[in-house]
Image (tube, rainbow over all chains, first blue to last red; front, side, top):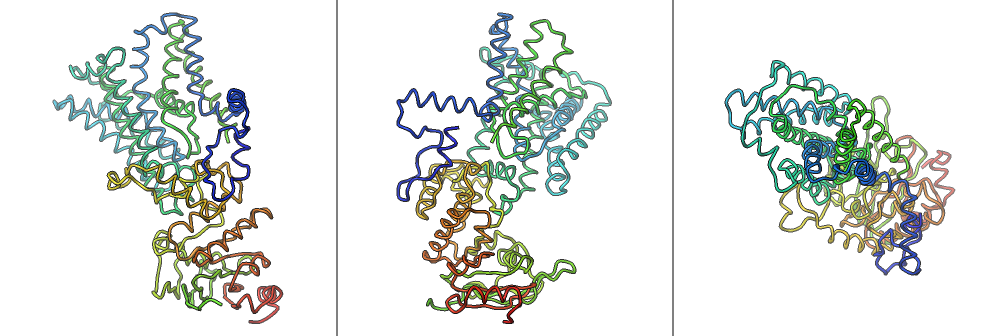
Length: 349
Length: 254
């Protein structure tokens, strides 16, 4: 609260540069007391909890699960949790781009399935792994471009468009695969899913690179600023000459490309290209974004938040499995966590 | 009195939305280095005229000359490029972005080596923050820090940021649509000083206002609109508030 008062208070007189950062305590109280006061204010601010729900939740879960089962934090389990989270991290980063513009991509998991099936189609046609990977990414990108054009230029609600492409993409996947999985046996793919550096698997490296690149693009480039502007206020963005439809097309394309990339990781992990629905990936990608403090109306959020959200959801299902809880309870736990996180965002200013 | 060099001239501008004739052959002039006020009752066509000037609408008939050349802006961006900046009634700031991000929105400064990357140009945040601080303190704007989010600013501070952005990039004409409509007494005073300051710095200002005291205090010239027509123009020095009110209501013929 004290931080807010300082920001909205009167400004320094003209001439002195307005350099004091918001958030620093105004008084000249001894350092520790001032820090404690600011900290107290921050902790009472609901916005802090909304922004950091994923980080706090992850720490709490780790403490609980480790207390209940000491193998939770063994290097082997950490390794498998990280590998298990890689696909979700990639999908959540893609979802983040879309949600930052105030949209939502319900087709993200179906695009991944579509990409995976294209990969399998390539394999059964006798093409190389690299060609199949490119095909998967292009397939995801295609769904993304169609989503973006319909939302941006067609001015149809994000929800309706991507609900439609969810159905269309998973249908096309079934058509192309004729409903049957294609087994993919390949040394490079096997290494992608099982190899790595120490406890960091290669798929985790891929996910980390995606997250870092996404962060740099969003926070350090001109286009990234325009994504936030288009989501924060489409009207204001348009008034400054930013093309909101072009931004929409771009974010859906980014999300589609990342879904295609996730398809490669999925095929490597499963060892087959299946036309399966993968609906839990859709729910979890939205859940990770909400947990990560990205505003569902757009204009506000980070990349680190959704990444932590994806890790939290993976830790949650891993921990529940370790504790011997029936897997039927996992969707219940995920749903509860997500709604609680969404509730926190109501206190944000 | 300043020299009567005409900056912007509207001649016979008409615009209809379906069967509603919003503007009927509006003709007026704006002089460089002056504050020109545009007054009129609700629905008289003030905002529509402003939108024609800043490139949002295109007139059905008639047109504008700006700095001696006939112009027809197809988009707000073209008007901006020509040096016409607009502070809209709804402010056009992005609340979740910081002050400096708003000041440089779609005009971001990129690093030299990465400037040619187009949309992926890498931002020089340091330079933008420094220049934003400069712009803000130059106009003596009471904005706390350029790193604060606009959401945390008061109405007057937001208006100041919007005006700062309009004035900051070598614009010749700054259009303001009801800049103090939503502000308290003190904040109105601050924004009025800012408007005077813009004129003193050499910008021409077109001020749309409902507040006659404000018009009498600030403007050099006033144009009165009624039912889509521009019915009268007066030098402020040669008119009174009563006369302007009479012109707006139609009690006095031009």
